[in-house]
Length: 312
Image (cartoon, rainbow, N blue to C red; front, side, top):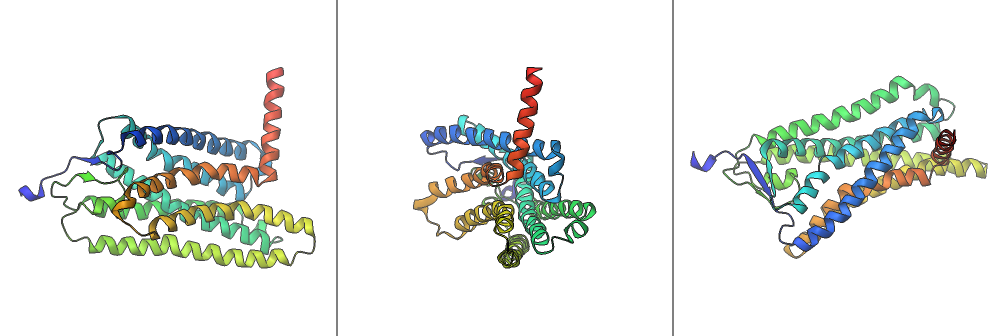
């Protein structure tokens, strides 16, 4: 029974050996986290206030912005506390909740990006039937199921991981309660966990990526058939922002998980993992704002209205 002593807290020691680096990363992550909160919150407010943006595309975009806020808020505040505090422990319950939210929100984003690609496919390839196909009931159900699928996947994997015996091992060589890092502490058979994790990765990473790829093949084919240059430009503009976000999200993920692992690159691996949690959520509102005339027009309209009210 002594070998199976219960674990009540975990110690996160990802970058604890580099205090100077921690201070630098604290400032950098704090700035990026504030940009994430501000940028994504503004994008949500804009899509709500401007009636012209009450469309399926901006409904999904609002969901993506809210998801990014929740995703970063589930891990970055605790990382900031660890960077500036000598205490690097996290309770068992807090670790469980952090794993559930980060894994669930990450899974949801994979599905949501595929849903957004389908929305663009219908809009470009079937423009006349778009209002009928992508009606309010359908796009709200698509968004809701994205959240349900992500949360159910996270719930199953988190419960299966946290009920395993840790045999007193409570030192996680990571900055957060990441499932792969936590499974290394388990002192029993984890083959079922690995199997479910592999299946979930195929279902929630590979399949959505393939659907996005196929969607954009049809989209590109339809755009090239447009006779008017202005029409082609508008179609490219509405799709390019989403495509850039997809490339960033999957590009960083593939680089992070396929690059060779070694002890010499451990610090760089930790920084890449940390950056992955803040780079795409920070850039998403910037990309959609810069690449979308409707968003820029809505920002200008709301800004002018605010200035008018302040003068009055």
